[in-house]
Structure formats: C-alpha cells, structure tokens
Image (cartoon, rainbow, N blue to C red):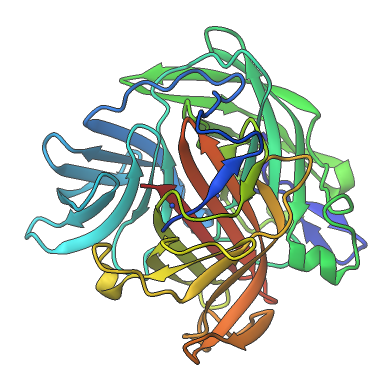
Length: 430
C-alpha cells in the first residue's frame, strides 16, 4: 500500500502520500441496536487474557523498527519495545476493562494504555512528553472474502504543510488469507491546506503516485501475523520510482496499521523520512449519524506535535457524558490523569457533514482544545476563542473517522495548525 509518496507540484515543493474512545450517540442510518458484520471481515475471536500488538510510535520517522506490545491480564504484566531491541516490562494496574496503568520495576507509574483487548492498544510509554504508540493485533492470516475499505490518518510525527493527511484504500484476499490485493488508494491533503489553496473538498486534493493495485503476502508465527508488500513509490511526477517495503497489521474488526520504509529512496530526492506509519479503521457497513443523547463512553489520548522543536505532548482524555449539541461532542482531560474522576470539559469535536461516499468519514471536522501552551503546541492555531469558563481555546480544521466494528466504536481525528503541526485524537469505546 502506498501511504507515503513524494510528488513535486507546481515546482514549489515535494509532496508525499502518507499514512489514526466519554459518551457518544452514534446510530446507524437504518436505526436499531443490531450491529451488522463488516462486509468481508471475519467474526473476531474472543479476546484472551494475553494479547500482543504490533505498531509504532507517532514519531515514526525516527523509528527503524516496529514495536511489539503485550498486555498480560493473567499475570498483570506488560512489555513493549522495538522488535529486536530491549523490551521495557513491568506490572499493570487496571481501573476498568480498557484502561491500564503501567508500573515500573519499583512500582511507580511509568506509562498509560487504553486497550480494546484482542483488537488494538493506544500506549503512552512514559510521561506526557512521550510520543503516542498505536498498535494492532492480527493473530492469523484470515480471509476477508470481499473488498473492504479502510480509512486512515498519517502518523503525527511528520512535518510540512503540503502533505497527504488522510486517505483510504481497499483490500481483498483469498479464503485462506495468505495472498492480499490492495487497490484504489486515494490520499488527500489536510482540510486547512485545500481550503487555503481554494480547492474543493476533497475531490481536488488527491495524490496519485502509486500503482493502481499491488499484491502482498501474509505470514503468521506464534500467534502474530503481518501482511507485507513492496510497492513502488513514484517521485518526480512519476519519472522515478523506488520500491518501498511495507507492512500491514489488520485486526478482524478492522483496526488498521501500516508502516513504510523509505530507505531505498536516494538522498538526491530530498526525502527526509526513513519510516512513515498510518493509523486507521475499516469503513462501517452503514452511514453513521451523530445526535440525540449519549449511549457509549470513549477513552483515549490527545497527541500533539511541534515539529520545529521535535517535541510532543500526550494527554489522557475522555469524551461524552453529556448530550450532543448538533454534531459537537464535548470532552477533555482528567484531573491528575485519573479516569475515575469526572472529566474536565475543555475540548470538543465538531464533526459537521458526513462524506456521502465514505461511511463514518467527516472531512469538515473541527477540533477545539485549551490554548494552554502558546509557546509550544497552540501558537499557530487556525482560530482562537473563549469557552464558557472564560478560558482561551484553540481551534483547527481536521478529519474525523468513526468506525463501528462489531459493536465497538473507534474514533480517530487528526487536525493541523497553520504551521503543519498535528493534533491527533485516538479514542476507544469502553
């Protein structure tokens, strides 16, 4: 899959294609409480007490290896770290089904995680300055028996404004899941960027630069599987191409992770990233509407990046627990990052209109967060305001993806400021 492809456009700069749960009332368009099975995807197996995931930190350009993450609820233990490297391990304390506190060897808190057991995990491996890790579990080479659409957002550790920001791709395979075929990828720049350039949303913002389709192979060992390919990345408007080793990890319920290695691209192309990851979800069977009163609770993290200083900020957040006004859902941080406490309502997501061609995709969304770090993460906001408590707020344009996977909601929202810095929100249903 071609999630990251450089293109030179209008002789200005090199573009590239790259590759992301409070209470939320999200209802399928047809109503009712029965959740349809995602077309093509198999029923997920029951999660075990021990689950392992594969992913990468949000500053993936600086990472040379994928990360392995294991949450063992049988022994109340965890381990994480880059493949082939030294693992960090310790014990866990669990406050509810999905929230995990990581403790070091001395029993002190050394990180946080939000898990959907058997599907995926959002990990903060350290304090609030640690880049967020998104990882997915694929236990076997399952067959999907159809053409399934996945929507994704690029990992937040990349810089520059004229870049692909979100996109979609289709995948199909045989009944045994050993051979996969990826096709019809579309990559789009950020809403802020294409509005700045006066383009339509999103039809005038696509990035070709990759083959129409390509094959991949799945291998599994010791209860973990990956799908690998080596598609061509097109540079110089297609006059140059280089093989890009690519790895996919896809859960049966449609959580999606992808990593591409660009070390084959010569320095003469001006390419600055060795690795790029994407975080995504499968498209829901039916259109998803937002409205009414709360029905589910979501917990996750807000991940902010400042590329000029190579610094990050990651905060535990919860959303919902309040009626939804129009298409706006409120949430925010927890006092002392303790999810047993009531959430401090200091953030909001406004989804606006759903893309009629992509169920659960909102490409006119807005993310509002506290303007509490002007010198670091909120100094280039698209607009500023004042909330009901009289505190300053920061608002940026973004893209939100909502997926209903076997009765579980996942939200990935990514927004960008005027300097190209990203704020990425990842939420799992509790």
